[in-house]
Amino acid sequence: MAIGLAGSRFGRAQEDPVRDHSRVPSISELKTTFEFEAVAWAKLPRAAYDYMAYGADGEVTLRRNRDVFDEVDLIPRGIQMAEAPKTELKLFGAAMAYPVLVSPTAGHSQFFAEGELATHRGATAAGATMIVSNNSTYPFDKVAAAAKGPVWVQLYPKPQLDANRAYLESAQAAGAQAVVVTIDQQASSYERALHDRNLSYSNPAMRRPPARPGSTNPYRISASRLWYEWKLFDEIRPFVKVPMLAKGILTAEDAKLALDHGVDGIYVSNHGGRSLDYDPSTLEVLPEIVDAVNGRAPVLFDSGIRRGSDVLKALALGASAVCCGRAPLWGLSAYGTAGVQRVLEILQTEFVDAMRSAGCPSLEAINRKIVAAQYS
Ligand SMILES: Cc1cc2nc3c(=O)[nH]c(=O)nc-3n(C[C@H](O)[C@H](O)[C@H](O)COP(=O)(O)O)c2cc1C
Image 1: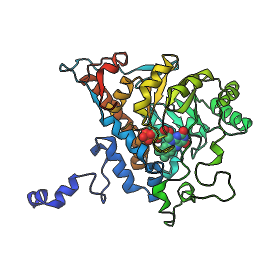
Image 2: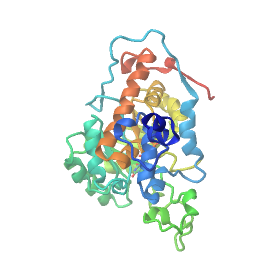
Image 3: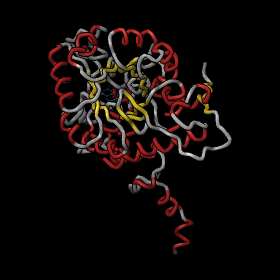
Image 4: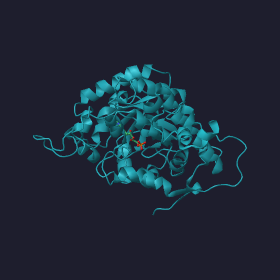
């Protein structure tokens, strides 16, 4: 009977954790971050999964963020190193075990009831720093207190300076070790969702109608995010006593302007393909931004990181560290705290393996010579 079952398609289905949605695999069965997405998809209400997965408009940038990683080769070294590569770094004076952080993402309770509290606990267990979104479900101080690991805070600037001040001062008082100011705009609607508007989405972001009568900008980006000027950084600087980064930088010119306006770090990001469709993938523009920054500030990177080899490629092209948006959310959605921890640990382990195969004993040894880009 057992032999018959093992040879049958029912037996095989039980062995395939991704295809068999009727059974939730145990966390130890999953070996790559991608497999966590399949479990997240099976577990989440459709609106929550869609909100996390979708990109702006035709999702060209969303796809391109991943495609370019496939077009960058790693140059292998035949003899593997006996010693484990050293992955520790200091970022803004803080010690980190790996150059991998958690990007700010909104509304974690739609993915797991304990929301950002669970994400912070998972990041702490993996030794990673979490950047808490301005639009977190739980208030920043509660998230910070949920675990011992370091937290940074992200700000979507408001036109009222006092509102920015109150938010930034209370977050710093609660332990925020850096401030990330997001300057790109999240898409006001997702094209894939527009056709689903009658499907009783509970998430207002997914139900937003395509036209907003009475608005000066009725069709696309919310007017609440179109007023930014570079002097914003000068205005909020007096309230920021910790390192301040500009998130959403995609050109050398903007990186230089951000530095001129006093930021301490550049964060290369296209919002995971959720901002302006057809803007470049972050990996393609990273080298020119790194060259423009010329060592004056750390350069963080996100949008598309799914594997440890992606981390190595981004570092080879000049990033000081990378951040991950969707991958930890897949872990959170699938298994809560343990899922966040495991996804980050998979990235860390794969990164170490990739460093070894590329002959890099430390982060300092990672440079452009270990990659060959197939795009021009
Ligand atoms: C569900 C979701 C919510 C997000 N919310 C925010 C946010 O509140 N603030 C922000 O600066 N970026 C936000 N982002 C963008 C992420 O910080 C990050 O730039 C992006 O997810 C990186 O791409 P990746 O998902 O391919 O790793 C969000 C992204 C996702 C997927």
